[in-house]
Image (cartoon, rainbow, N blue to C red; front, side, top):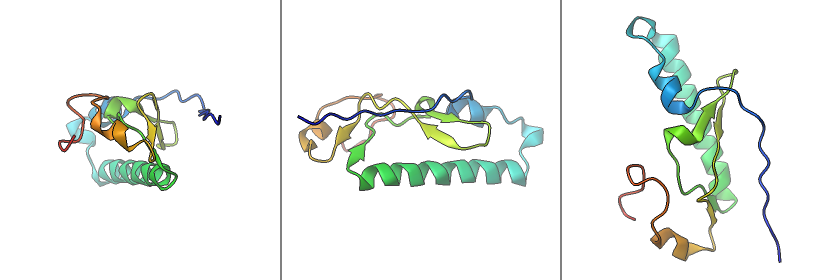
Length: 104
């Protein structure tokens, strides 16, 4: 029997929701929007790598993404994750109701 173990670094930063709300209207300059876009793109790349390896998070939401001191997003909480071969898991409702894909 094979088992999977995920080891993550300690990230002492806000979750994505808190980070995105931290910008005050006066500080929402072009550089702030550029930073948000870069964080989003890094998150998409990270999810893409997971999907290419057949791993699906299952509970993607702002609270499950931490932003480190270098503005790099870190995907956390793989508790509802599943492998591509476990297709039946897609049909079971797990994760957060307000963030779940509408087709499920």
